[in-house]
Image (cartoon, rainbow over all chains, first blue to last red; front, side, top):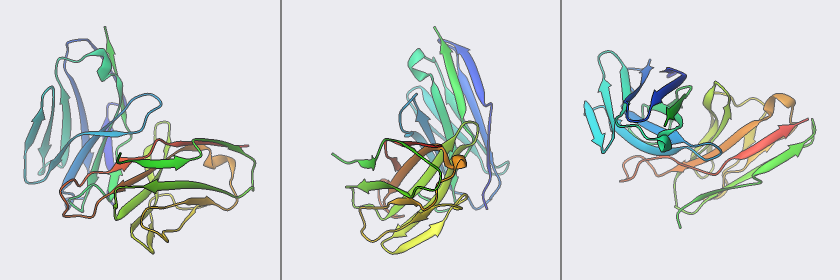
Length: 113
Length: 115
């Protein structure tokens, strides 16, 4: 089955700096890659996603890049703010949809004011 | 309001005492799933259901049962809970493949402690 690895497990940045979280996946058939943000005590919520026919997608301060050849994808957050502090999860699916997801282990991002 | 609900939100029980965590969604989603979240292990899928009366094992199904008798409900059953099932549980739902918003919506979570 699919295996998704996520790095780093913790990341600390200064407010205003950029943060990058990387994930690798094992199944070359995977074609949908969402990112979820989980604030303390809350449920995971989708922040951005990308499909395998696209190399990059951007939404304001967040962007995701996908390298199908290398089987890795990354989340980029620019101009980080304290409210970006949370746990971020990447996931992969072979179903080109939001179901059948395999999640990475999560990255705890801390943005220091 | 579109939502996924879970009950109870918090539960303390003892080893061997059967329990059920309910999950309900009002979005007419075909797909529903249960995950457990443990520190350092991320979200691991327990069971999922592609539609009514269709369920399948995820990555960590041992010790759990599910049923999907109605489209909106997907209860998680622990027949004989053990301490290693102490965890944070999330139910999630998503529409079928090919629909416009193919994303997974999570419930608020159920924190379970098995003594």
